[in-house]
Length: 295
Image (cartoon, rainbow, N blue to C red):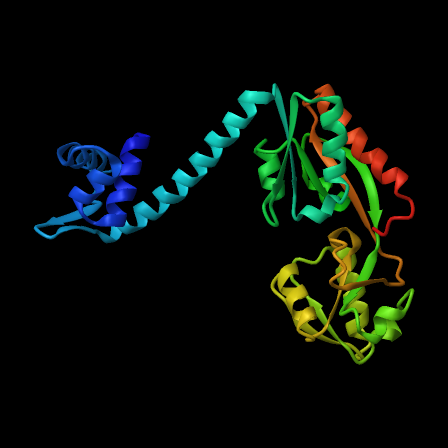
């Protein structure tokens, strides 16, 4: 299977007409027909049903073309990244995290690093899930995670980055938003949004609140859904400070508890590139200097 066959197949699936697909791909109809036949012979099943009216996707073909279209988009992005990289950079460092705001000083670190190492590219990779798996497959050079999870990750070096506290997220006009520090009693009578993906430290606080019998809860699928529910007035939410995007849309009020989150960067133990270590040092320095920054 080659890229031309993939493109021909996707275009024919779009037009369902051999002649029109051939015109759109700037080839003769016999050429397109022949390449589609070669592709079907290779995969071992009919992708299209032929008729006097044109073509129709078989059930297997419909599923196959969906995968092909996704693969083609991934290939396109890979080619574009390769073109960008080959034109300017001699090395690339990929950092994976669940959301952009998790490493708030990342843009500033990239800017500082670019001034020092203009021929090394920093590539952010955002994966709300499966970030650890991607890192273990060496699809990323740096992983942002919580220190508690690193015990299960083999062959890594852990770099302490910052300690993140727990905050209450509410609407800005909520009566709780005017306080400087909230206690468990402040949340009595309120509905708390909770999600299955909460880290252990946050779950411990939530369970204490629920054990009081004075706080209701509402299950929320993920953080974005939680924020939508908070914006809709359906409840409030406790969250790690590192999820704060500092957009001002919500009030983030410190919550009085002993629990916190140790945020770290992981690198592969066998990766000792000077540029990699230099970039991590820049990030650590930015966080050390941000003593008054809410995390």
